[in-house]
Image (cartoon, rainbow, N blue to C red):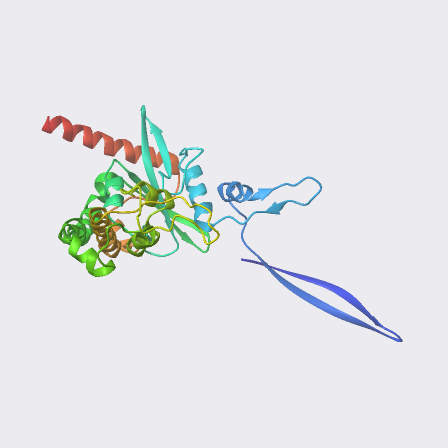
Length: 301
């Protein structure tokens, strides 16, 4: 940090007495930004005609992701959504998907609600870059190939496997007798009955598309003033049993996910630390991985 001391005088007028005060301001300024950091910061500045430039608030994770994308010379889809692939590396005629993670600690956070969907995504040829920051400044990065991450993924897959087995098998034990015990025996179950089971898990469109009875005999066909009302239909006991089974699976699955499992710093003990020539180093490491996998494929062919 650079400390700058500024001296100036302030004249305070309080008639009929004049006072002079000497003020000392100590201002601490950060070290100059690097070119990459300045480029990322500029992305958050928007010039408005007739106004001073205004800085748009950008989430810190997004700022770091942008810096990583620039440093490693990666590309991103223009219409990319948050749950989609973070970035791509185009190399030797291939377009490889990358997951970008950053942290200010020694461990790395992954995702909320880790489960089978993440395992499937991460095993689909996904490459990784981990960036470690201190006081907002990038210190070093690690590259991890799909093979590098397999042991961590496998360990966590084994941890959640029993719970997801329950989520897949237990719903089949739900019976129509359980529906009757919860909601009573009815010829037609209403939308309100269905909502008591599924709550906000379904959209209005899904509730409508799952109705299997077109006419509810207990529905009032007219309003209090005598105007006709459209009969909304409803759900059979069989359909309600199916709905309760779906809800059971959903509830168990929600309780089976891991909340933000972390990758400890010790996991990267044998990884090459990237501090300079980020783009070139990444391409060298990726080519080494691709050469190994090609050799393995040829040996097992």
